[in-house]
Image (cartoon, rainbow, N blue to C red; front, side):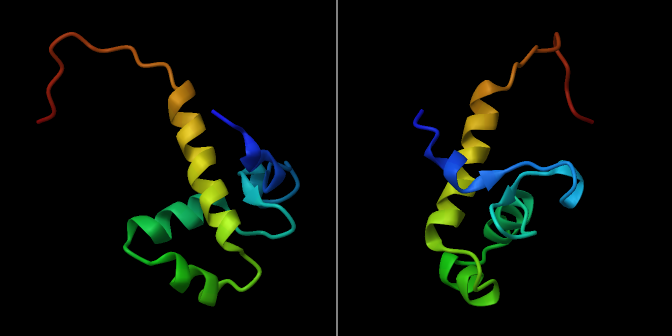
Amino acid sequence: MNNDYEKRITLDSHIMAGKPIIKGTRITVELILRLLGEGETVEEILHEYPQVTREDVFAALKYATHIIEEEKVFPLADFRYA
């Protein structure tokens, strides 16, 4: 996967407790993902957070995808949710 999101996403232990953020802001990747997950459109996010660009939103998605791709999964034998 092309990690071009690295130009837009940064981690700094002094900003937002080290969570990944959009560079130059205090807006977390988590917030962008939450808003999208709640049904907000990219246009709504851009209107609500004018310091964020369309490319930033897509970089947040690419970052999240990369994290999940790297996740190690260890299946539990016959585990079922109650």
